[in-house]
Image (cartoon, rainbow, N blue to C red; front, top):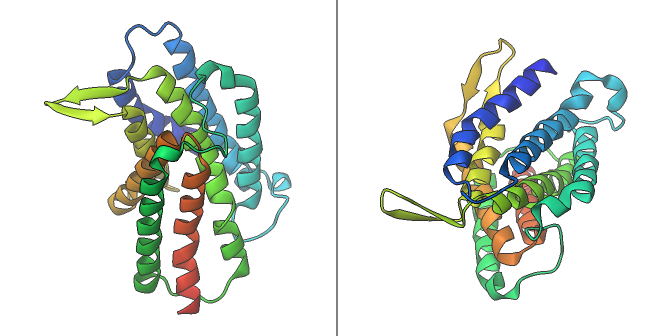
Length: 245
């Protein structure tokens, strides 16, 4: 567990310079919200990985971390219930959609799904596995979209500027990009068994881009519903193609 906490602290440490660069200057409770963001992220990672360290918590046996994902989802929902007032009105845990951008979003979802299918044909070769299909089509998207695009994007949208200018380039909504970076880091920056940092640049680029796109979807639609659908499709389709081709 110590290694997992340290790994998560490293992710936060990488992220903080970007966060402080984009803070609203006149925000009174920014220290509270930054602390809330960090505490939530660390707690989320502990819940997610707790079944790996305490066998009694692994109540669903299988090849995938069903128990950890369920703990993370329940913990996130409790957090949202108790602290959502702190990042009002940036609440994306709803199925209501802002209709103006739906056409663009559905186009992007289709492109992501098409790329996932191509990825399955090129890089996946698996025997049929119902557990993998059931898991990838449900829990990863639910857990990570509630956490990253629902709660953490909501907190950052409350404390960061809507736009920042760097080297004469206007960067739209830095909250989206910062959440994308964090999403990439949790997948690609790891402490191995020897406590040495490893970084998979290809995996980082992939997950950073997807995380940023899903953040854009959440901002435009004001909901995590379509990012969640796209997320689970991008997880499921390559595995499915790799099993049936």
